[in-house]
Length: 268
Ligand code: NAP
Image 1 (cartoon, rainbow, N blue to C red):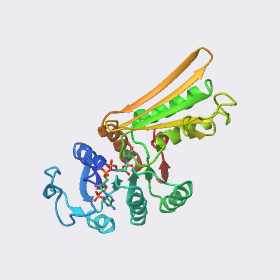
Image 2: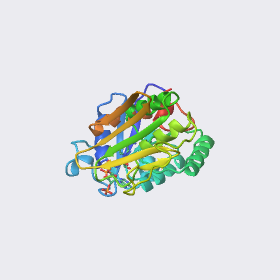
Image 3: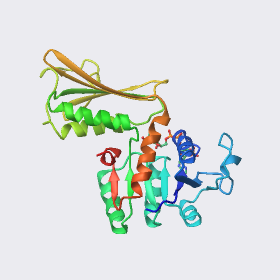
Image 4: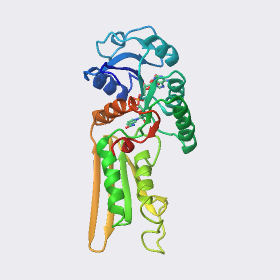
């Protein structure tokens, strides 16, 4: 990579994450925001849209045309699951490196996109969680699970979230399963008098999902052993928490020639 600025397109600039990304990219000296991709407002500039910053950045609705016109290096996608997948494909087809923050990718889809990225020799990042602290929480939980394998997860999110449990809770449980055998927890004869009281069951790890207004994204991993408990907790207080991870992904994707799934794999 030469010393010139990394030229960036952001998809979803009016969204809560997209607005933070516009701020982060325009505040970073070695990043250059070339254009944004929105569901509407094609032909306008960002500054012409209500509530958007005073930036003379062109707005497109069609990503392929946007890539063609701007010759950008990286696409940051913070839209919604279906668009994230579509934009990932268009980015790879058109030779631009995608950094995708949407969730909902199956193992099969990750396999397919990995093969495309490898064939093209193009870097790509899919990161369901850009919060560096949340990645550390998962890593610490995996480390501790070797020694304290009785574990329950409580995740808490705002009440607009559609899926449960969160992708982060599932990922945490999967990372823990890498280091412990599936096991039943609690009393062998326990029964629920109220359905769901013991939470979801992932290979014996119980996952509890709380949804309330006022929350952003929070997770506790609770571990118990004889005479002691250990709690590992992460709180996302504001969406700006995700931006150091987005920045890291953009810088890393320029040096990659394959697809990396999960920010944890850029933090080794
Ligand atoms: P949001 O406020 O609903 O914003 C989504 C934005 O994307 C909206 O402005 C929407 O426009 C736009 N959009 C949808 N489809 C599009 C398309 N095809 N082209 C261009 N723009 C499109 O949601 P958010 O809270 O910012 O979250 C955005 C995404 O990031 C979600 O998928 C969320 O799950 C994910 N997320 C990821 C992380 C992470 O760490 N990886 C963290 C938080 C959230 P319309 O309103 O016109 O549909």
